[in-house]
Image (cartoon, rainbow, N blue to C red; front, side):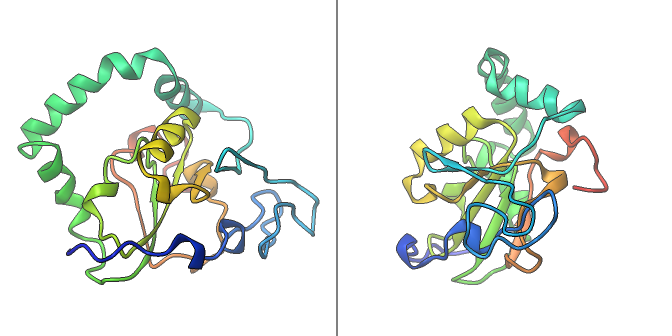
Length: 184
């Protein structure tokens, strides 16, 4: 994949144009509330909230990544990636290389976290991200301003997007935390 010029965020559709209500599955068609059931999906500080009460492993994972445990564990993750790659970049490329090889695409990363994969993707891609850890989404947005209003606090098991909204959807490392692997 080669890097292309950054896509103009202003030309991208609002995230709610790609979204559906996760309660009744009705397309939001650019609205922040569902015209079918009335559920509201607020955008707080550039992060769209499309999440209910977390349970099971999703609750455990969100607590871990939103809390101090992740900060202490992160160096061990980096060490693990050195053994896998060697190095974080090469370890991540083992999965990312299967993404489409095209200059322009709309893609969704499920479990985007702090955005470690963002610098490895073509700049011409219209990237969106989902995560269950709100603090990780905040870090990602601070690191990559182009993702403002493209990050969603949601679960992989209940993605709030209409079918066909993305050219590719991928996840690296999140599957071990998903509460329901088949639904995800």
